[in-house]
Amino acid sequence: MLGVFALLVTLGNLTASAEDGKDGIKTVFVIAMENHNWTQPANQFTGNIQQIFQNPAAPFTNSLVNGTAFAAVNGRTINISDQVAYATNYHSVLATPNGNNPHIHPSEPNYLWAEAGTNFGILNDNDPFSAVNPSNQNSTQHLVTFLTRAGKTWRSYQEDTDLATVAGQLTNVPLPRDQWTVPIKSFSGVFAPGSFNQFNGSNQFNYATKHNPQVFFTDSNGGNNATTSNPLRFQYAPLQQLFADLASNTVADYNFISPNQFNDMHTTLAGGYKGLSGDPAKILQGDDFLRQIVPVIMASKAYKEHGAIIIWFDESEQDGVAGDNPDDFNHTIGEIVISQRARKNVNGVPYSSPLNFTHSSDLRTMQEIFRTGGPFLGDAANATDLSDLFDEGAIPQKLHEDDSDR
Image 1 (cartoon, rainbow, N blue to C red):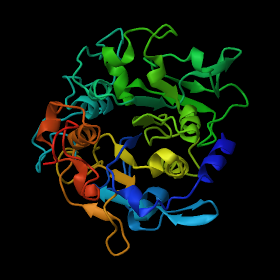
Image 2: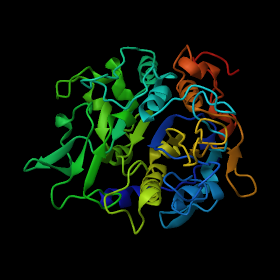
Image 3: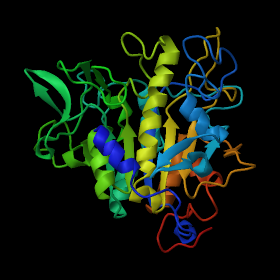
Image 4: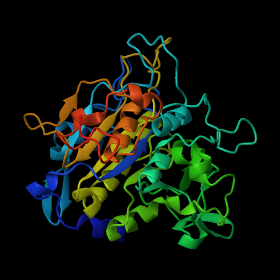
């Protein structure tokens, strides 16, 4: 894996020609992160849930937005921040200034919302085919089905899935492709001796279906079938496959990437991480994941030819003060765009959009980028798209190939 990383980071450089910037976005990589506010009114850098913005436990993430993110590519130092824009007023779905609104929590309903513009009434983190209160949906009104109808491809890359076993214990080695299945059940534990996570060096794994939105719909999960007979199994891939697909330029048009629950800032590793414990450890675990994966994606042909990376956080959180309401406008959620078509820096610092965005904004934007045809899905019909984070023309703002830009 480290060899693949080294190979990809030395592929090409990130200085595309000017003419490459004329077309709209063609390939999207969403990296899903977890359970942290971008900003919050109290306990910003103390307590059980801390904000990400300016947090010393998130040096890479903050370097992206403060203009100091660099990566070595082909022996040259590239300023990643030149290709960054971010949101400063991204809120929970349905949030209002005073927080007197429906509360869409915990994680799973937010992932459903990002896929369909609604949570379908789900307010739990159950697996799609759980014995009690299963969350599977039979609706066809969701993004990846619209993508398929529009002739676009999609793939869900999920860390800790489709792994081989030794003496009954999982290893961090992916199974051959013909043994992949649709990951409809959550699981966690410890790898077989000698096997370690390539991002954090631990021997722990933790896959959660609640962070895999496409797996909650019958027409994109193939039903309650976790065997190799499921015809949709190749829509899902172990995270290791992403690096092979980047190298061979065979990624999908829309790529949804879910780190495991240690690498997405959700859960602290047993024993902490790099001398930290509690929430700072969670944050650094996820920050280190981003530090490693973002330059690899940026070095790929898919990124350099009209690609975009979106670092997306799932939900706002209480800041620890009694009575705190995470769904008011005092709590914001992280949303960072990395693209050659990102809105240009302002005085050497990435552009920060003041517009009010939610998960519905991302969904609306995906429908526009890939011209899925109508209607806008659920609350996406009411949302502001992410155009403010991009150069003019990067987001087509139309749902059909033959429509004129509005």
